Length: 139
Image 1 (tube, one colour):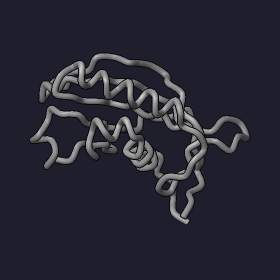
Image 2 (cartoon, rainbow, N blue to C red):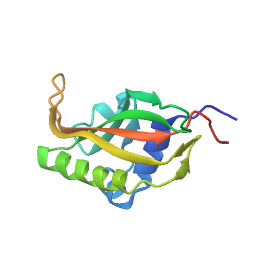
Image 3 (tube, rainbow, N blue to C red):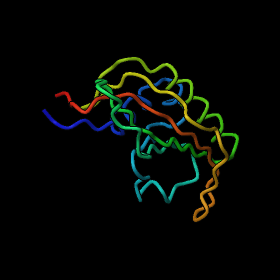
């Protein structure tokens, strides 16, 4: 049995959402935007990064991973529409297995905030989510 990877699981979950998929054409990434894709930015893309977590709570079987959801677009409006699509998809998250992780639910912690990549100047939006998962992976 492998260790769970909640970020990879969320990438798979969002990439499979019909509305998000229609907007990004496969550009949902974990940790960083690949270098070969960065040269084509700004365009619609989702970037999921771990932001710590509240961890285990008492004897609960859940682990709570905090995740930053960044959306980019050719324009701020495109980034906003993509962020709203991700918001809708994450609010609908129910217990499911993706990659090596079980995802149970997601709750927005903050956002939606404007985001401007200071190095590249890409328009974007930003929100933070707490995702219930487990420390036990699935195969």
